[in-house]
Length: 302
Image 1 (tube, one colour):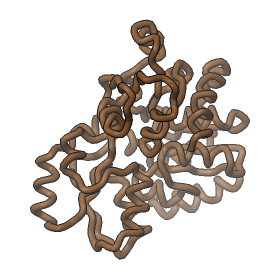
Image 2 (image 1 turned 120 degrees about the vertical axis):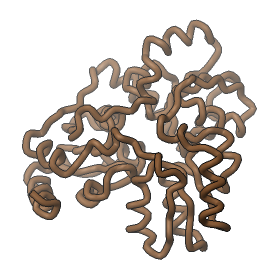
Image 3 (image 1 turned 60 degrees about the vertical axis):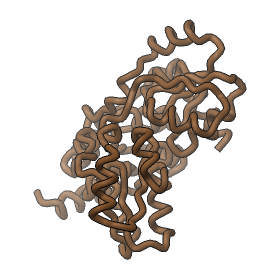
Image 4 (image 1 turned 30 degrees about the vertical axis):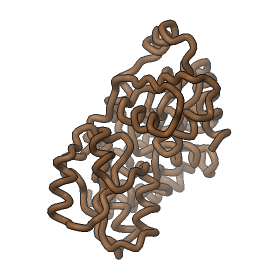
């Protein structure tokens, strides 16, 4: 079945099942095309709670679908690619957080949303790449254990007087981007702004012109007065930029910046998930309750 036929079936079945389709900025183009909303992980999870629809088809990775299930316990949350995980989220566990609290009893635990529900449940507050600085500065403690992204933690540490203790996790996609990539991009496209994600290495951030979350990148490009931009994040975002800012030329900072887990979702899996209302994502009530507290603390200061 070709894409056009799949899209037609998905749209019809979506209405029949009272479903909404959410797609992360890194999803493949055809998947973005059938989505009701495209955005970053938190934007999508918040939308899941507010948009009408008894079924949420989350085109992303596991922790995103978990967050949607936590914030929308009355809805069915489906993850079409059941094995789409986030390696960085798996670099910290709830048990490790409990152990770390014993070593750092005076530290607040700030969990990036790119974590499991269990880790969120053991943390004091969550954050996104867009609001991490604001969240860290909001906690009362002078010491902050930031999990799991060491690069984002070090970026946040530049903008706070608090002692930030970085967990030694990282995004396997952003951590691959190098200063040499920036040098090459500048040579290939002289005078073009370089925008990178705060999950990049510190030296890459130093070499860039701007640092933004994925949604911040899109806003900057669409509102900017430049004709071209170099984008330092997962290349799936370029599809959305081309659609929303057709007058701008956007180039990937690195052709290696591909998240294989984000690319596991395809139109066939989306259709199957609507037909079967599976794979269903659920979070145990006790974990969901504690994780929701950490998320809502973050939302209260946004």
